[in-house]
Structures are given as C-alpha cells and as structure tokens.
Image (cartoon, rainbow, N blue to C red):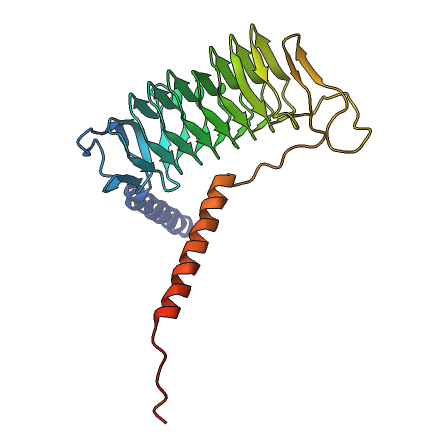
Length: 315
C-alpha cells in the first residue's frame, strides 16, 4: 500500500514538472528568423518590426536573426548593443552603392561576411563586434570609409580591403583563423593604431602600394606579415609599429629600435616601437566628441546664468 502511494506521488510530481515545462516553453526567448530586412530608398523598413525609425536614424530594439540591406543614403543604423545573428550563409549588413551611412553599436555573428561595403563611399563602421563569420568586414571598390573601434574576432578573415583612401583605425583584430587584415590591390589606405593579435597571419599585403601602416601592435600572430609585389609606408617618419619578434635594441632608451624591422626588400619599418601602442577602449575621436560636447554644454549653462536677472531682496 505504501509503495503504491509512493508511486502515485512520484507520478504526480512528474506530471507537475511536465506541465511547468509546457507552460514555460512558449515564454522562452527564441529569436525568430526575420530573413532579409531592407531599409528602402524611401526610408521605409521592410521585413521586421524590430528596427525603430526616427528620421534618418534606425535603431534596433531587439536581437534579430537575419540580414539587413541598406538602400538609402545618409542614415545611421544603430544596433544599440543588440545582436544580428546569421546562419553562416548570408551577409549581415550590406551597403551597395550607398554613401554617408553609419553602422554602429551592433553585434554580428555567424555570417558569410559580417559587413559588406561595395561601391560605397564616405561611410563609417564604428564600435561593432563581428565574430564567427568567414569574413568579418569586406570593403570593395569603396573609398573614404572609416572603420574604427570595432572588435573583429574568431572569423576566418578579419578585414578584407580592396580599394583606396580608407581608414582602418583603432580596431581590435584578434584570433582570426587565417588573416587579420587582407589588403588586395589596395593603395593609399591608412592602417593606424590597431591591435592585430593571435591571428594565423596578421596582415597580408598583395599587389598594393603606398598604404600608410603605423602605430599598430603585432602580437602573437603565427606570421605577422606577408607581402607580395607590394610597397608600403610603415612609419610616420618618427614612429612605426610594435612587433613582438623585433630582435633589435634601444640603446638610447627613446622607445624606438636602433635598427629597422625588415619585412622584405621593398618594405621596412624604420622606427619600430619597443613597447605596444596603447589602443583606447573607445577611439580617440569619440573621446574628443565627448569633450567638445561637455565644453559646449558647460558654456551654454554659464551663458544662461549670465543672462538671468538677479533676484531682488525684498527686505
């Protein structure tokens, strides 16, 4: 009799557990696949209700599973810290023949290419996290774009750059299984102040010319640099890059190596750094904007106080 009661009690407990699971299951936060989302040329958003528009600013209000194609110029796509999740096949953000677009504060993972910039100029890719994709960021046939303050990690290629006059500044490019930065047929680009660490190959330069590359940290890459039929400018005339395998000395203690870091017969870093460059968590231009905003606000408050009439003492 006791065993029968025990069995019934166990069955009742199991039933209660199953009911709890069934009730809770619909409330589990599952990110629904959105497919391809469009910001159309007329400003409308098609394919999701998780992007909020305020004029020319488009802000994510939730994680999204899918990809985004921007067809409108002069807009800001603000991820607001949310994630855009792919399935490994599509591209995350596509800018094709678009100008003056800002993509910022977005987490992208598991794409063929995280962000594609093709035939597009004067765009900004700022403070995004791009992981787990074949290529993190691809700039092709595009000029005067700025890529700054991004964390690009655990991809096959970090950044691929195939054009001129772009700025790759103060990014953390780490643990990419093949190449950190790949320059192919690229010229007159600025590659400045990046942490290029723990990649298989740090920076591959193929058929390139006159790219300016300095204040970068090359640390713990299997091979820091490969060049093929290329020449580059590897310092600013006073300081170059930090290479953790630099074999030279600094006899006068000025922080600059006594001898050049030789890359190949056409490329040498004349002023190798003896210590890594400090890369800010937020890019320097961001800090400058914060400072300028503070000064402007403080000035406005002070001006308002000067224009206020003094209170009259009725006593």
